[in-house]
Length: 387
Image (cartoon, rainbow, N blue to C red; front, top):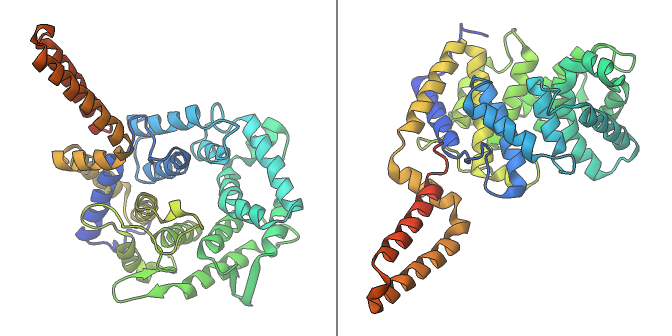
């Protein structure tokens, strides 16, 4: 924590709090985030990491429900099983999330990647396996005690070296990608010296130097590749690598935060340049969550935890006082796939009303029953996020 700088103004904090409120308003009733079923694991895993960074209570209702959703919905057969493992490692849950079976599977699949060096496996390594290796760092002793296995750091480093491009002794990149380069710096930063990499700290410094040199400086913003998601990752990686020392981005931290901070409505419109090459990573919700993670990390670095708590409380107040039209509009967008079904139900009700008008002996109560049921259904859907 560097409280001497305190680089952010009230506008940055207000946009951060409003963004957190928007983020909370997009939560599903079951505790997850995301609309499409195949995207909800990615969104929810990112959301859990944001909640932790923003200093939400690990035992609080919102965070516990999100974690419970991961437990219930992400099965061994899911292609996103590694997200379940990573979250389990981050929160230290070895009973339900990061179980022995998932740990064994992770190490087995990691060794397969070293043998089968395809483009798909390269992407899997940097997208999924390297973040999990970083999360596993604090638990390697437990890993050895639990399943009698060790992380193959020598093989990991040999694999990473294949993708390094060295411009100078003090400037290295991984495939000219800021997100890959930052991740490798974070991994090597926690690595003890080994024969193949006797001085990991020098590699870390060279990787960070490339990140600093590749930043884009504009009038009042600093970013990487015009991407909020990528900039958020780089910001988090550099701050975590720097530890308690002064960071090489101290002099531009406000401009980075200004680029990441959501608009006055609480979100960012999306990303032109994505962190990874999928449509999901360009979506507004994904870009907003990553931007908020970056801001939360920066606030935690340059301020005391009281500022995180203050911003979180302000966000919860905003969320609970959102105007009714915002809730209706947001819920309409999130449930637009159900609109045809709702319209069909409405036509059925109108049909019942017409029958009643021509056959009054059926009773007027049928109208009230049908309309009441329909309105109850609509109300449930529109306010499904208010639990």
